[in-house]
Length: 366
Image (cartoon, rainbow, N blue to C red):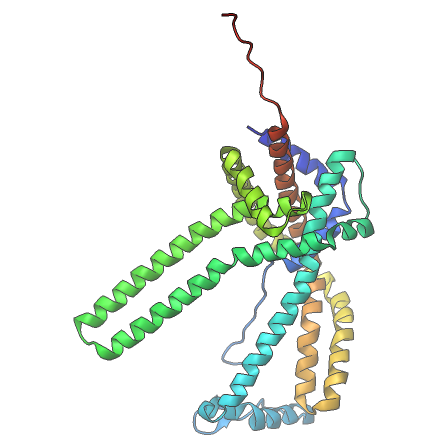
């Protein structure tokens, strides 16, 4: 069995004494998952839209506001009033959103996986030699084929999610056609059966992803620390988990408890940091103005009117929120560094157990 208490204490020591890792932690917090902010409006915000006259605009005599109202009426109102006449437009909007998501995902991946690989290898090197690798050298440790292999591992692990979506889509289509061809009690039976199957699929998916999430800790460390190929990373990670499943399961439970505690503490810290958010608003505006104006200037060459302003604002918002919520990114980065260090030390200790020669039992003379 591994010494869980020792690993937790050592990971805590690494977190506070190897501060270059904080940079990679922030990068992981931004690209590997975070909190999405959303906001909405109320019914009394000044916008007017009714079924008979359509959008009447924001009541104002300002020429810019009136120009926005005219642009909205000419370009967006027809999409809402007669959507069946603008199917091609919706298709192009969907394609544009898909391409945008793909580009953002690619950019995030180019930061996330080298950062994750760098953290794993830097902690491993620190444990081997006591050397605290700098940021540039650490990035070199992450920017290689090992990061690509970890990306492929995540891609394979995500396949059950796509399979679940296909199952739910097929289930929905089956229910749809059943409702069209049935009536009365048959409809109720179909709906109940569909809901039951959906819950069963989702429950099985959750259990599977929990297991794969645990196994991933071993898959990616085999790829990062032992430079194994993708298939060998799966075999190596599975073999290590299989040989130490009790220790791995216990460590997973401990980290689950720590994660829950961090989530509760993070919620409290979110509200305690409100004064910091307010202080960072002005620097955030200064930083966000630069990409916003750049996008506005480029867009204004090809389009006129409010569209250039809208795209400029959309380009500025991510930078604005990135600066405003920088304290949260740092705290989330701390947790990601600690979590990664725990699993890296766990992998190292399990690997060390494999090299321990079994004790030789002396044979009694015949």
